[in-house]
Length: 134
Length: 483
Image: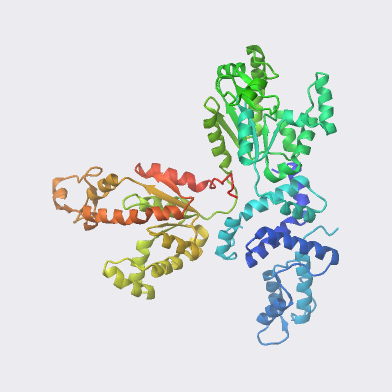
């Protein structure tokens, strides 16, 4: 049973995207496993704060080379495109559910590397920009 | 992080890592702070919180009827934890703040200070540096349910709520001898707790509220009127302690309570090591724990036999040692264990290990390869009981049933005649195994500082209850850090 204050808190957490922020931090911690998690978290948040003002370089586990290699894995024969199904799988694995489900080339079931990279980058940026964007 | 839903998504070492650094508690504290304060810019707020360097500071309320020794105990706790001591008097004593001045205005007019003003006073006080850094101990406040609820509303909640209890007659008598040092605010008693120096002795005065029986009774009545309401809104960390004891005893009980931690929702995979001499009931306890909490029962002896029967590579290497009745070398043993403990079932559900480690070196190696136990139990049994338990056992060679001359004697003479003692149970061999264990027991105990010692010379289920009680609650934390 949700009392009004509970709802209020929930709303606040969603609006400020705090749970996502903590999810991202956890992901970073799992990956790096730093000796001093607190200092690491401070560092992460500083970076995020900076990225918020500059709108650049959001702290994220994946960079462009990762995106490329994911595409390379899905397209081992170097055809230059992947199917829509593969695209959907890939964005789920990369943890960017907010990506466009109908990217360019979806109608012919061929998604080129270029549009794949573009979509994932936008989605990753959205996923790591965990603050109130209003 | 529900491990049943997402197995394998998180590397197993991360669980150990998170536990070691208290990540769950850190997250909880941060989120709590954010939800209570609801700042416009949570990032900034979190950064500030993280930089404050206050890991899990105490937040304690010490309460009780008049003359139960609240102030004395609270001051002792503060001295020990170096936390800030706060009472109604210290709140009002602040000369600078306008809030305190307003409160005093109320007092002058013989009015009751309104709850909202108290809350304001307290929340400004708690924002000061010393409270944030070292925590706080609140003495005798809140006094009513209304005040307690108002505090909760602004997000001030204690982690521990200690109530000192004593019979009214004791309290009335105690109040008669109560004396206060007006300079430091310390409380003394004319018979039980007399000050050491004669200088203090001279300045002692009777407390402002009076020592008479009538005044105390009135205050007791007021206290009892509110006591239940207070208890009901501080259910979680509530602990009543009998205050009708010497000061030192009360204090040590309070400290024990303060070092205990609330059960948290943090995901917890038990990694248990059971240690004890032969015949102490390690296997029985391991089986009980494993079946109740659905964790994996790992026995080093069994792993060795398994490896040999499977004719695996390690098994081949071990075989000559076992055939010659020699101890398996540490590095092989560690390898076998690592293989078993790194399997998915052990990682997700946890494990209980027995028969290992036997030496300090083995214990160190076990931690080194990433399988650090989070609970270690020593099952302590006197040697006499071990002999009684083991050497009197006999085995029916026809049916394979086990009998014990005292606890489970063979039913008929025929069975009795044909049953024999297992060669492993011979007194000589048991003595040998015992001396092997005790040769290293102390070393291992040194290594596992947080280990629990359990008297295993009891009924198996009584022992199991002991094990359980320490398994399900978080380990008590060390209140005073060595610096």
